[in-house]
Length: 426
Image (spheres, one colour):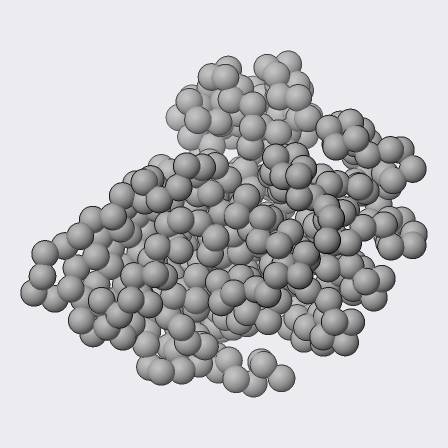
C-alpha cells in the first residue's frame, strides 16, 4: 500500500498543532488530503502547511462528510459531544478513524459507536496517548516480566497544575460538563485507561468523591473584576491572573519566548499584541471566579477490579506543575514512578532497587512524553494493514475507561455510592 491519505477534522491544538504537525514529519508514509475547520484563518494556515487545495477544505465536518470518501482515514479532533455523530457518518462512508478522547460522555453513544464500527468493519483508535509513551510502556514491560508478582494495588495522582486548570477547565473549552464532558472523563480518561491497562483487569465497581471547591463567585477575593484587565484590584496576589499566565509566566508566557500551547489556543500567531487582544476581549481573560464553569477541581476515584485488585486515582487542580506519579504494588515487589522526572524505581522484596532512567529509552519526548507521535505512527501502520498489538487503544479497549469515568461521576453526584460496572456494559 502507498501513502495513507488522511483527512483532519478540527484544527485546534490537538488536530493541527499536534497531529497535523506530526504528520508533516511522516510524509513518506502519510499525506493530509482534506481539512475541516470553522475558523477560516486556521483552515487557511493548515491548508498552506499541508498543501491541501481549496476544494478539499471545508468549514464544517458535516460538509466534508457529505462528499464522496476523500481519504483512507479521518483524524477526528472536534468537541466531545460531536465525536460519535460525526464518527458514525464517517464509518458508514468507509473511513478508519483516529478519535480524540473522550469518545462521548453518553453511555448509549459508547454502545452505538462500537456497534457501528463492527457493522462497518472499520478500525477506530482512541487518543489515549499515554499508553504510547516510553514511560508507561516501560512500566507495562516491568509488570509483564513478573518481577513484582501479581498487581494488587495501584495509586496514581494526576497533578493538573493550577494554570492548566484555569486555562482548560475554568476559562476554556472543557469548563462545563453540559457542553462537553465531566472533568473525570475529559481530563482523566487517560489515567483511567492506563490504570485498567496496567492492572490487566476489567473494573467491577467504583466509588468517587469530589467537588468544585475554589472557582466559584463566592470565593472571589475582594475587589476582583469580571475580567483580569478591567482594573482588577485583586490582580497582584492572584496566581490565576491571565496576564501572569499568558504573558509573564516562564513556561507559558509569550514575553518569555513561548509560542506553543496554551498560547496557540488564544491566537494563531501568538505575539504580545495578539495575546493581549485575546485576553482583553476573549474567554481566556475572564476572572476565574466569574466563569460559566461547573467541572470539579479535585476528585478521587476508587476502583475494585474483577480479580480484587484495588486502584485509586487522585486528580487535583491545586499543584504548581502538571505531572503524573504512581505506585504499583505487587505480591513480590513494587514500582514507584514519576513521569515529570522520567524515572521508574523497581524493587523486588528483599532486593536492591533498580532505577530506570526513561530519558535513555527514546530520543523524542515531545507531545505527552513522546506519546502523540507514537500514536499517529501506530495509526498509520494499522490503517495500512498491520494488526494492532495489546497496547493499541482500540475502540473496545478504550470504552472500559469511559465506563469507569461515567460510574465515577455518578458516584460523585450521589455521595460516593458504589456503582457496579457490569450493568453498564450492556
